[in-house]
Length: 176
Image (cartoon, rainbow, N blue to C red; front, side, top):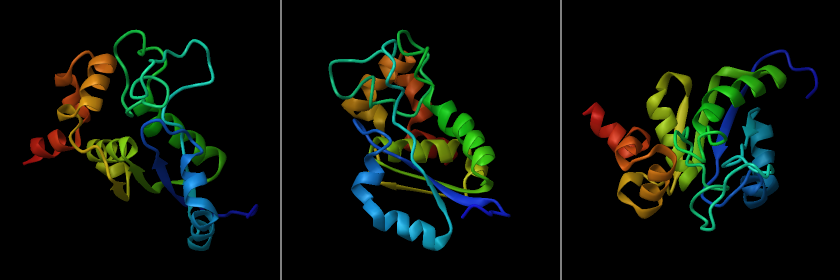
């Protein structure tokens, strides 16, 4: 509706490895959008990595580079210039959608699938007061112990050890 007089709650959906911002819309189809409209919530579906710029580094393999941002802020070259996905998801994109589309800064949820589920869990675990709820479908829960995560954390963060700060299992173990 064009006459919105209150902040609209929203769900941020993080897609998985090799996906882009169209993945959820295509696979969920109109039913998801009809349900969201009926419930009065907005759906925000960001891309999984930077792309559409020749200076964005990529890898020949599907599990690193474009389509595989792992929702972390890369600290290692050549990814450190463009791959700031954690900041994009937690700061830049919320600020943009909340100001431009009157979305609520307090009534927001985060969810995702596979690599996106990993991102949703770790982002919510690190900033629990920012999200009303978190959910994940088939998430990569312990990426420091799987080949995808090991490869990504070494390339983006310099080591698997640094990746523990972005591993849902490790984050939960720290709390117990």
